[in-house]
Length: 226
Image (tube, rainbow, N blue to C red; front, top):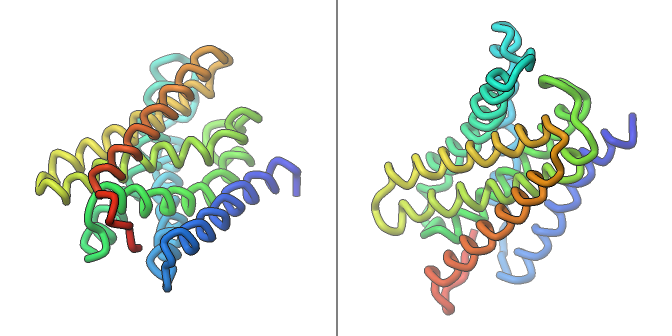
């Protein structure tokens, strides 16, 4: 087993363990059952991107010979294919829970779903199951990027429950997360470090702003209880 493959498994796993310990201590959660389910369902959701990629290979769309092919594969196959499964579980399983009250709860569940997804998907990317083997930049940044995509999806999915506007906010959640994920993959197909740096800074700022906004909406006296 190569070092890259070991890292692709170990990085998401370490982040999962750190966050589990943090939420257990910070919010004094008695049971991590739902969070563990989120991780497991996130792992299961990776089946969709595998299916999307299988179809793309069968139709020849994984042969990234030009900009148009690269764009389609990045946004439709990788971006949408990765985020659709996560969204289905977040929207139709966790959103119905009584403990899921708004955007902050959505972000928490979404992060753990995405980490479960990354635990399966990143090793697959690393060994070249998809279009092409990934480089060090992708390997080191994918798990963190997945958390950023999760913040966007979780915020808008939870927002839909808070303001009773689930259709519009759900479409925003899956659309924005898919776009950012696809753009991230597209950037990694190039060697332009400048675009990657600006994209990373932008995603960091967007994620922080959404987390801060969700905390403010939750209220100082209210804590998320997964």
